[in-house]
Amino acid sequence: MKRISFTARPMSALQTITPLAVTMTLSLTGLTTPAAALDLQRDDVQSFVAQMVEEHGLDREYVSSVLADSKTQQSILDAMSRPAERVKPWHEYRAIFLTPKRIDAGVEFYAQHRERLELIEAETGVPPEMILGIVGVESFFGRITGSHRVIDALATLGFDYPPRAKFFRSEFQQAFLLAREEGLELDSLVGSYAGAMGPPQFIPSSYRAYAVDGDGDGQRDLIGNWDDVLASVGNYFAVHKWKAGEPVAATATLSERAAEPELQTDLKPGSSVNRLSEAGVLFATELDGDAAAGLWRLEGEKGDEYWVGFHNLYVITRYNRSVMYALAAWQLGNEIMQAADRAAGELAENAL
Image 1 (tube, helix red, strand yellow):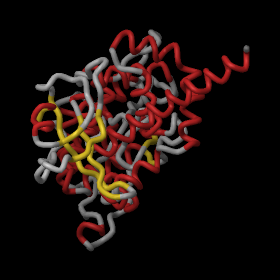
Image 2: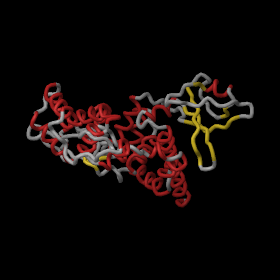
Image 3: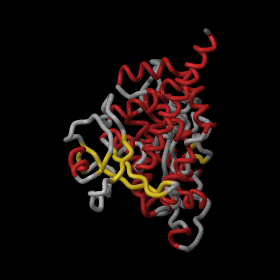
């Protein structure tokens, strides 16, 4: 990963979605298309520059030059308005990630990084399958990490996407700070339409908060260092209180005596194993009766599917706030580990 001295011309940035212009996405307003270049005379842009200078000590000319180089893009606004988690039913969403090609790639990746993954599990309690599922869903094990310049993504969403402009403008600030801390070249970083970068698709604030130096070389490189990437994903889950050895979710059915089930309306399980069982929800778990649990209904290929999610499902949604995402990442990781076990068994048989 290219690094530079921050004294010359700072750089940096990372992940999700941010800054510039004043128009809203056509899909949201039906009005004008955003300008290609950011207007530095806008009040919100001037305020952003002043904040970076006064609160964070960055050079005014440098911040202004990065903003001037940023381009707002309608394609980013369009993508933001239709994420797969919101427009696809569960069975179609799952099919994007649970494919033979992705599972085979995961088996190969696991063979290459098994030692590191086992070390991370020993240190954090986060199992290899969970980390494999995340990097498999997020970037196809590094094959798909995005093609948008991070500064364009953050400028577009931070200044031209009113519904979440405050959040993405904050991420743009985080990107500047990250660049200073890690010596990253801000204007050359590429990532998703939301500004997420590298194989783990961390946004700038997550990079700063959760990235770790996995190989002890003194750098936190989430762009090109797999040891750092895997350790950082494990650290993310550990910080969000992953419970080692506990389940993520279980399929469920409704007994004949069950009334209309009490479905989850948010991501954090709001019921318990006992309460769901007493309500006629049938599922298997070894968790105690007072353990947190919630019931979700998803659109399967053959009709409704019921899923009971536990604490660790909620932890996965801290990475991406979607139950479908959490289930897909968990299932992909499990499929990879099962395929790896089968391959190992076949090798052992052939060796006899």
